[in-house]
Image (cartoon, rainbow, N blue to C red):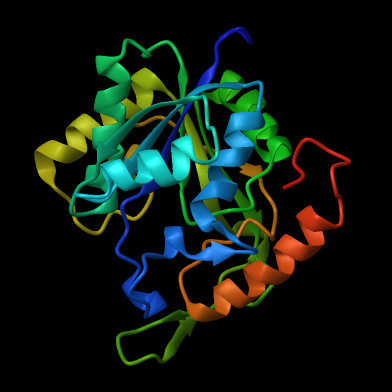
Length: 249
């Protein structure tokens, strides 16, 4: 493992966003006049660790994404806009296959949800340093609240120790052989209850996945309440900086 290896960001923007309750998909909803997806792509565009981006979008949205996101906001690192699949893991698999098609197997795969606009260069750097050592890592944060395990009728069964419980975010970062092998095995079995990339590696390989701290602000916009919170974060995190850092928007 050497630090001269770059990363390829696979940014997932194919979700339907049913819980948002809007006709517009959540990644295209506006935050302070710009699409949610813009903010996610921007941090990868600015990071020196990322050489290229593959944008995975819903069927029929490829041209819109290219013109209204990539060209409009001048994202130079986007090397492909491709069609996603029925489930999240299908979209990731399509992104990994595109990496292979372009001969990018020597790069680290940074898999990121396009509905997470608040990833920062600092988070990307921490994940990069960790994947050099571990080959597999996922961004997350320790939980603040007490967590309960419940049964099917919502009766509490047990209370796990908080120091062993994290909320998982993205990016999730892997050496290409580790993540490609795991997803190749998954696609042969089609386990539909898989919800993130670390879980795929956990289920399909014996390779450990290290957790690395992200940020509590690194939320995924899923519901209308999330969008309201995100508007506050945009004002606080980005607008207050007003050009003072590279992550100013």
